[in-house]
Image (cartoon, rainbow, N blue to C red; front, side):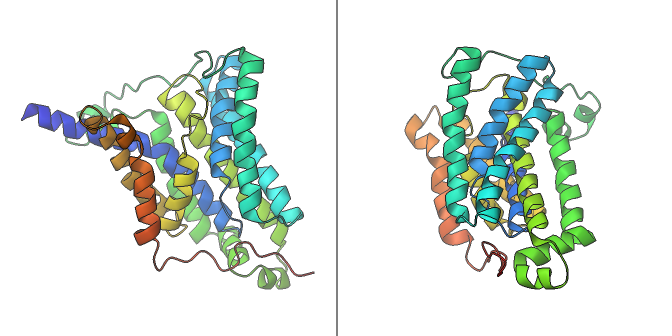
Length: 305
């Protein structure tokens, strides 16, 4: 009986850890979609964030500086998406995929040039394993929350702040107006391009933070293509959560739970079957979970000049 209880605690703690990068990336997608720009570039922004977070930590010897570097370069890569789509009116699906392909090509190149290694980087300063003595004393949930590092709690705080920003502030209301009808927003005096750029920059910052969590929160190094499609899954989660930060949290926990179950079935089922589980789940959500959900009406639309 004790073994089963320990297993349940382990699965729940693992669910929260697995959910963090998905929460951050899908929440970034909320900002992009609520500014009227498709979020298909999340995978590349996450991958850039994971690599440059390690690079920043390696140069500075400080995990927090590495984290900020990951956020910064996630935003930088998002600007490539923004310039192509907003300024040059390239289809957002194409510009987003360009960012993904660019990150997949650039990160292994820089890994070889800077670290002189392929496949993975050297170990760097990362976020230490948690030691939350007070939290662990809380009945039932203490063991689960006590196993999370500080970035998990930062993520939950960001979900709350993001929801308040999007739904309880004037700026958030204006962003959502831009995503629904950019022409009408422009007519009442809003600078639509600025709001779109802001939303995409925020999506890159959040995705970069999610990538940094993978390399500095779960590990202490960069592994080639370590996002493993999480950015694409985050796009689905964002739609599943109706482009709402709270919905993104719930959808990410759902996917994180099934991701954590892989550890149980690894010794029972073939590894290839276990590894394909998140992608099969994604297909099922796309097929059955997105019915009735609509993206903001102005996504992909440009101002008529």
